[in-house]
Image (tube, rainbow, N blue to C red):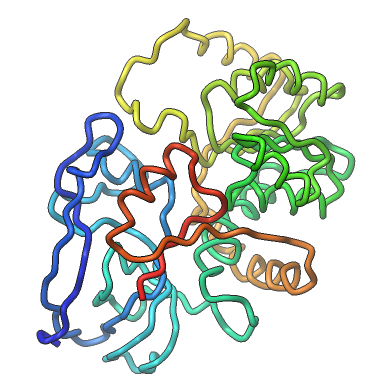
Length: 340
């Protein structure tokens, strides 16, 4: 396979605050020959996700950081072009950790074959029918535990996780309030069926949120942190549940002392007083739910009960700039890179 050229993006250096172009490097290298049990993939679609910012840091996390000079991590939809695995055929389309590159050699047992015969576009396996969709599904089911008639609020509600959270919550009989950044995204939430859609960039956002929630919040699905969380906290009901899957507002400030008063003691008192459930999670914590998610989500998508939106970028070389935009909320829908 040494005559096949692999184009890849590596982590050239660790960012100091906000990532910049100099933190990445585009390279071309030969593709190694797959060994026993391995397969060679031609990556067709690459997912860009907020968690990748954490992989650029050396600090403690739930997963190891990307090493300097190593290929940036990422999930891909890929085509098998050579196989030394007895159960995987050349030509199969699979989901894998193929990373920010055009080709990858991976262990055959590490891939996921979720595309099936659903009739869905293959890119959805990186979005609503993949990790982001499953994050919404698992966080609601295992931590949110919504009951009909309760009120759910979700931040970053126009993104792949938040939009799915809101739509599943409606299917479960909840009242839903979605928060997004900008009027265009706010209007999009209305098309998804949110009962109330709010723009967190509005000067009077906190007042509008309070007015929209006369009966408080039973479940707050946290994707953002920052000033959105500050506006939500006073509105939480007793026994409210807070699944925490992201805090993108502070991803570029890891290790820094943030300005403003220390609100943690007051919040911890509120957690005790109101018997709040606050739980961070990653979707793989609930892998046993994945088969049920695939069945439910395929049905909802086919029946038109769940809608989704993709933000497609053309070409691997555009991935770093698209990633910068993701961290600033410039994407509109699930951000994917088309590698062909």
